[in-house]
Image (tube, rainbow, N blue to C red; front, side):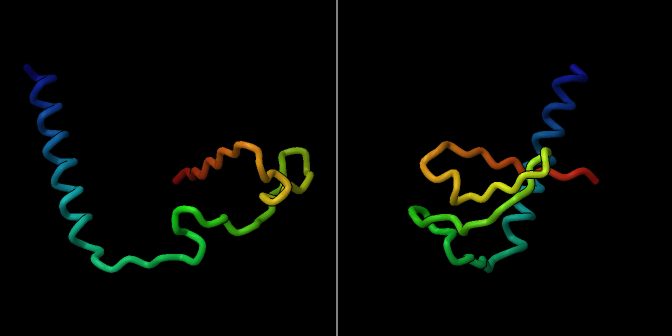
Amino acid sequence: MLKRGCCLGLGLALTGLMVVCASCGSSTTVVKGSEVGTMAPDFSLATLGGQSVSLSSLQGKPILLNFWATY
C-alpha cells in the first residue's frame, strides 16, 4: 500500500511540475541550423587521447553525442 501511495504521489508531483514548466516559458528561441533536415554546425573536440576530432570528419558515420554534467 505504501509503495502504491508513493508512486501515486510521485506521479502527481511530476505532472504538476510539467504543467508549471510548460506555462513558464511561452517564448521559444530557434537557433540557426536547429530545424529538422538541416546540417549541424561543425565543431571539434579533443579525445581522451589528446587528438582533435571534428564533426565534419565523421560525415556519413553514425554519431552519438552524450552531454552530461554533475552538480
